[in-house]
Structures are given as C-alpha cells and as structure tokens.
Length: 334
Image (tube, rainbow, N blue to C red):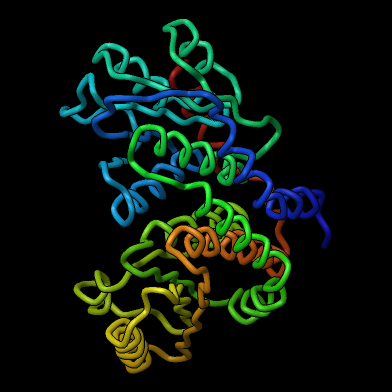
C-alpha cells in the first residue's frame, strides 16, 4: 500500500546531501574560543547527532565531545565547556530541564531547535539558538544537525580544516542515493521478516544505534545494535534466535585481516547456535573516515525506508511515542 508518508520520507532522505551542506554553513560568522570540552544533549532523533560527534571526536578530534540526554547534567561540567542542547521541536521536557540546570552552572551554551520553548529560553538568557528547518520529523533532520554540529565543533577547535572532508562526505551521500538504492532495497527484501542485528566497527559504533532507531521509527520493527569487537566479549554467549540476520557495516579504509576474521568467526559461531542464521556485509567505500561515516548513515536511512515498504507500514507516524507523551501529560495533571 502506498502511504502519504512514503513520499514525504523519500524526499527527506534524498535531501541528505543538500541538508548536510546547508547545515555546515548555517553557523555563519560564529566565533568560539577557549572551549574546553563540548557536550551535546538531546533525546531521540535530536540526540543522535551528539552520539555521532562523540564518535568522530574520538577518531579525528583534538578535544573531547561528550553526548548524553535526560534530566541530569554531569557533575563535572564547568564554565569552560560548551553545552549544546538539541531539541528539534524545542519542547522536549528532559532537554528543557537540563537547559535550566546548565544556565545555573554558567556554562557556555548554543542551542539547536526549530523554535519552541528552547529557542525562547535561549533568547531570554542571551544565548544563540541555531534554527533548524521546520516541517520535518526530528529523525529526518539529522543531516542538517550534523552539518551544524560539524561546523560548531570546528569553530570550537575540536576539528580542523573540515571543508574538504565535507565535500567528500556530500559526494559519498550522493553516490549512495544515485547508485546503491537497488542494493539496499534487495537487502531489505531479503531481511524484512528476520530478527535484525546491526553491527558496526568500533570507530563507528553509534551508526548501529542510528540504524536501529530508524528501523524502530520508520519500519515499526525491533532491532538490536552491536559493535565489534565488544560483542565478542558478551553478546555471543547468549546467541540469537532462529531466523536471525547480522548486517555488518564494513568501513573499507580501516578493514583489516583481524576485523575480517572476527566477522567470520562470529558468524560461524551464530550458525552453530541458531537455525536459518545468515549475514550480509555493507561495504562503506568512502575515502576517509567522515565520508564513510556519512555513507553508512544514508544507507541506514534507505534500508529503514525500504523495510517499511516490505512490511507495509507508513514510515512517518510514531503513534506509540505520541501515546506515551499524552500519558505523561495526563498523568502529570491528575
């Protein structure tokens, strides 16, 4: 069945290259000096960008990036740190409460939202709110958030000389959208009825979480995110149920014999423990870390979209989350 949300989500996914680049230049003449660490704070789709930036800072950064969410801030936050609350709607309860606590700690702060209370509170406290484009599902605005965050971190001294890397990442996103749709769609067709496990390499471990979140929200299906080698020290003992699929994300530039051997051994072990187990590998051909990371994100968005098609669900609504929010509001009013 064709749902209205199919066309909308399809257009959002295909806007990846444009949104990523547009976001990068959205910070304008913003200047940041004397920053200690950078702390991203957000929930759900708005919190994903911080996890990605934490991965990236570990691999190619010169300062730490920390990512979390919820109501409580880390005790160690100081006035030298840059706190970045992200809420697409601007009305996320946990993020607003954390904003207020950050103000009391006198941290440096830049928020990201499409408006709402977060933008209002930022303005009232003389902080910058970088506006996100309106009319998106929060999970679909990750490219813009990623571009903005990359630029903020570059200006804060976490990264250096990112303009060329950005162009290569944009090219990788275009390549996926123009050349790999059939491959990703065939993978979704082969796996939509299986128990899904998304496995990322160590340097990109948040990618598996992004894939799972997109599968949850777009496809309305359960999945689990894992990363190698960590899962070799715990997960493999529990095994998997029958009819399970491992989807390995393979970063070509860092894939070596040791990583290949781990994937082979892990899959062989699972085959011994479960009937109808199979695995697939998605090769990420980007020529550097950032471009291959973006490539993996676009592949995941496409996969979740095609999975929704084969499961015959509308990728746009998230009724379970909406119901829970309504329950929280009504419960608080009782």
